[in-house]
Structure formats: C-alpha cells, structure tokens
Image 1 (tube, helix red, strand yellow):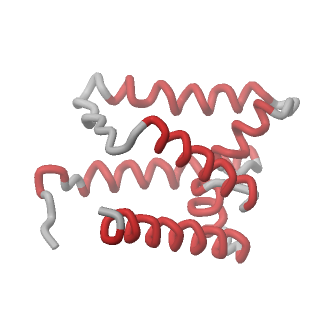
Image 2 (cartoon, rainbow, N blue to C red):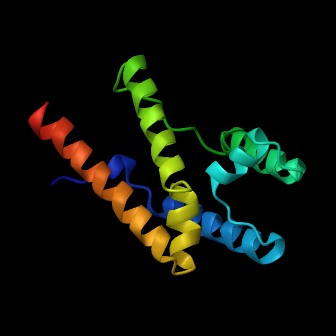
Image 3 (cartoon, rainbow, N blue to C red):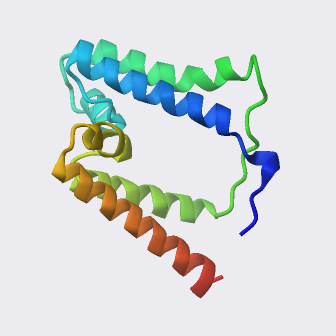
Length: 142
C-alpha cells in the first residue's frame, strides 16, 4: 500500500469531522432533531410542516463549497463511471436508505453516537456492502 501524500489532508479532514460532529450535536441538543440528510430531504418532499429549517440546512450544504472556494481550491471532480452507473448507484443508495430508515449521516454520525443498535446494524450493512462491492469491481471485474 502506498499513501498519496499530495492528497493526504489530515488537518482539513479533522476540521471537517469536528464541524460535522459539532453540527450534529448542536442539532440534537438545540432542536431535538437528528442531522440525517435523508430525513431532512424526506421531510421537504413529504410535506412536513417544519420546512424552513430544512431548507436552511440544505442551503448550507449547497453554499458551503462556494464559501470554501473563497479560501482554497475545491478538489477536482473525477467521474470514474458512466451516467448509467451513476443512475444505478443512486437508485441503490435510495433503496438502501429507505430500507434502513435513514442514511449514512443519520445512522453513522448520529445513531452510533447515541449507541443505537439499529444504527450499528445499518452501518455494518452498508459498510460491508461497500467493501464487497469495491472488491468485486476492483479485483473480479477490473
């Protein structure tokens, strides 16, 4: 294994992780809400009465890279699959999110920090599936 030191960013990663943890903690403490993106977007689409904070949360996700680009360059985007591959991946993630009653942010960040058994099972499931998928694509099909 070789580490790509040009793209090794421990400080930016630590800061990003700390901000995600701080945001998730503040959201549960101040609003009593789990910072799961699937639930936030689902409430927007599903007609929840409390749309304003959901819109601000999603707007923050969209605006954050623009603010970051004022201080540092954004990482280069690299597509390593076809549009059909992206559609299939999106559908699989959407189906998995529905079956798991939440997404990676809801289960992985918020659920695990609350010692939720359901979240632990969900995280083990999607991480295990990801590992197997990468192994198949890189070593059996590649």
